[in-house]
Length: 435
Image 1: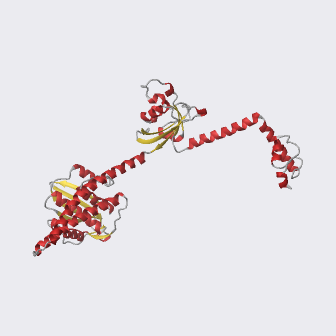
Image 2: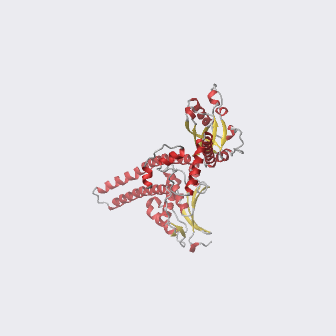
Image 3: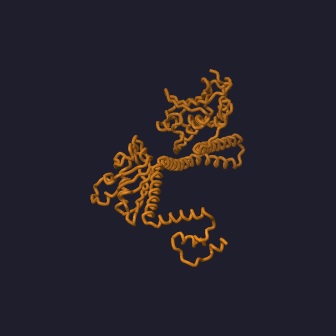
């Protein structure tokens, strides 16, 4: 019955808006599906339809909807974590002088809480225009907004450098949008939002520096690798020649081993730098016989380290906490720097001090250049994250310090009375913490 009523027709035309709607649904006043409740419902609907039919009632309803929407948008902007301002740029439409300051043509008429906090505005709801000069947005950014008016643009994206009320500099992107009622841009109510990109730009610059520095380093290291590799190849070819002199063959074999060792050391240092910059430098924490590690480095170093003395070498072992391979790498890099750059009378001493074991590589020779000293041995950890310089000496010393710090220690540099000292500090093992 109900289904046929929905799809059927009525004999007489509808007499009211309610009758029209009932007819569309296949219902009528004469055949209500319920009892008294249905009649009351129909009366209520009739009254509502009558109110809506009245033009004033419709207008009031529409105005309420507009007011609610406007209030919702205002609250959304006010509570936004992004700085938002309303700007009046209409003065730029009538300015004929090219000598006007951009700031003099801008009026900031409103700002949300986030913008007020960023720019140090005490009363963002005070109803008075804000002092543009105190906001800290650069003149170039204001100028770009003025250009938007003069070119009749309705949006702009402006990257600029500003200054906070405390004097701190920041970098940001300003997005401006112009309302266009009835197709006419309204430059009295330009909405501008800001995004702080200070950290992003700093990281971007750091990455550019890192890539450029890495490229220079690789170019320099390639040159350093070419020489020992050429020696290895030349000596290997000499070994291929028939010879009856065992001593000569032994010398050639030693020369090949030395060249290969230099290549391996450079490659190993590069791996440390790469892993350190990626935050992936892992070191073991086990008891390490520092005295034995020194002996092993000197033995592998061969003739190049044959002149290094170790006073007190035969005393009881000194046990520190660290990674045996990394400890050897630190010792090797410091000793090789002394051999190649510092001069003669190279010595290694080990001693305890409180809860640390200290290894000192001492030699005669000139001091480190000031820039290298500051770059490598500045305050603890200060420059360890700096991009690597294309200098293989810096590479070796920087790697040594990075490894020492990674093992919970450090390296100090001194140059006094014609002697250079690198003092490595490592944590003493539990059983070797005697004064």
